[in-house]
Length: 176
Image 1: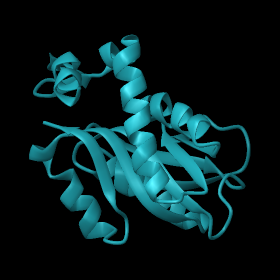
Image 2: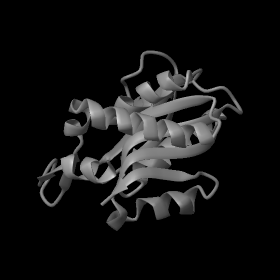
Image 3: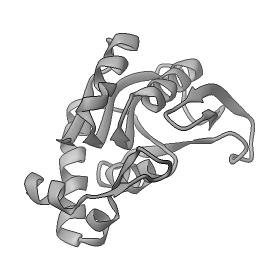
Image 4: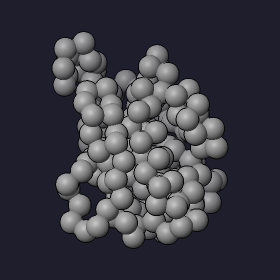
């Protein structure tokens, strides 16, 4: 099934800017068999970490974080770009491959000491992942893992995350 998942991901050349090969995962969520398999597999990874809460990163991370949280009867909190959340937030600088942005989470979304597993769709250079981990640590939460559907190994994001946060296990289902 993992090979089928890899085949269904469509690479869109020069999106969102020249030189980038964007991995379009929408065919996977459109296919009930693939989507169910992905949610089940990520849920297995998360369950092993005994997380108290799932946190997902805007916006494609929400596609996987929500059903995993539901399946495991966990709460889910969201990380969004600055200015998108309505209440008092904790904020971190979040540079990525395309721009310098800021990530926010509601100040009361994560309790001090709460065990958090972060879910996103993809690990590229690791910059967004590192920013998300920094944000959760800033709230007082303990990040017990970071899970993603896709990992672009040639960009060495996993190594960057492990260098910055050696205490956080990084997990992915498919690699390119």
